Image 1 (spheres, rainbow, N blue to C red):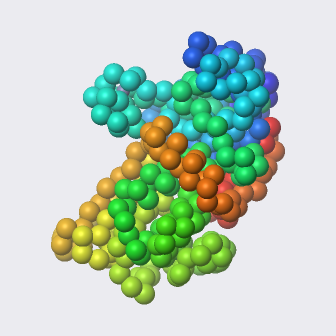
Image 2: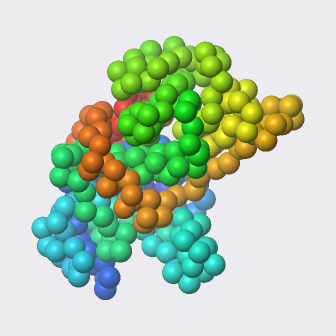
Length: 324
Ligand SMILES: [Zn+2]
Ligand SMILES: [Zn+2]
């Protein structure tokens, strides 16, 4: 099969011809139909996350057709593979419904080969049938942007006014879920990113502006998808008393020091790590019920480096996906 391979961090991916992977017991073999490109892929490729498997096939938003193996998913089923690829089932986190924090968790496109390839293998327990209404490339961003976005939204409590900092793949889906739940969405982008602001308004945000601005009304909660630590104090300024600021990304630049009064009055800053299978089931059921408009531009697999460069430059509106 063809695959785009990370040989070493901070080097472009290499297009290689690899042997098709063979499913081990408990795994399925999937013919990849599309694979989303997530900001986390950039963090892995740029060496910001420690000790990736090398060489590595990136990609953890895999949409594929089951070709082989599987007791739960029949051959021919379209299934999605997310970031959480394996958990131990035994540690205190796994046994308390928090497998996202498993001490021995393994992640797709990081410690396990992912979906920038013609085929992928995955533990069947972490593969999910996908709602039919979404074509392959549109289904791909649901698997991380959608799913971790959904978990972040749940961690934000029950806000009437929700701020989203960084309006890319995750925010453009979360905004629609939040709206369907009757929330007001305030979208914050890099200064001057009018394309992202326009997209936010098209998708129903009541306000869109620069992340350096304060919203017209205090927020009940904010979710940060942009990997910019300076946005933490900025978002604390924007939330009301007891407001929650959720950091949705896996990596972020350092958070600058800030006056305690920004946190005072029971404001909360918290992170969201990974996902659980329950998040996937809940979110995919919601995505089947609520038609989400997925803005995605499918690109051929061999253009992975160009897509990553565009993502790094903030030049992608909505989500990105590769098609083998
Ligand atoms: Zn565990
Ligand atoms: Zn991701």
